[in-house]
Length: 152
Image (cartoon, rainbow, N blue to C red; front, side):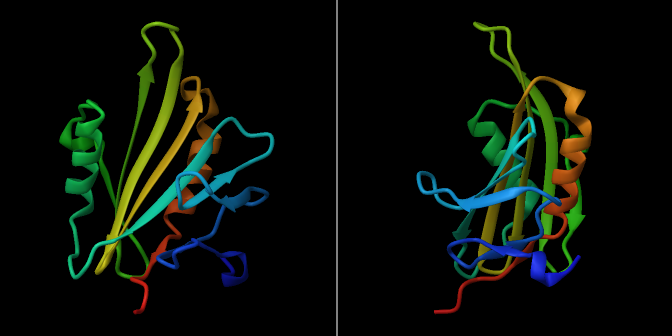
């Protein structure tokens, strides 16, 4: 992937190559970066944090994030993805049903870490697994993450 296609988050902690034809913009409300396809079913949100001198374990951070949302996963439901800059990414997917509405939402959630930086990535879309090709594009894009702690 060409570096010319890379986008940088507003805080300078990560870059990523979005899927071809996808739009992106800083998320003014929640911070980070929002990425979506105009005719797509879902959207990807990435937000970064300064992790100080720590190099957090991405899987531990992912389990903690999901535990706060009362999502339970088996250990083998998390994929470890090495990133080309030496960072690490833990990635999982699941479906959640709104009991009141009966609607199903597909979630692809990841945590990427490198020394001094932590990035949370959440992709969600209404419906179940019928939009698998879009989710695969998101997985590929997340594999292009490059993390860098901002210089002081």
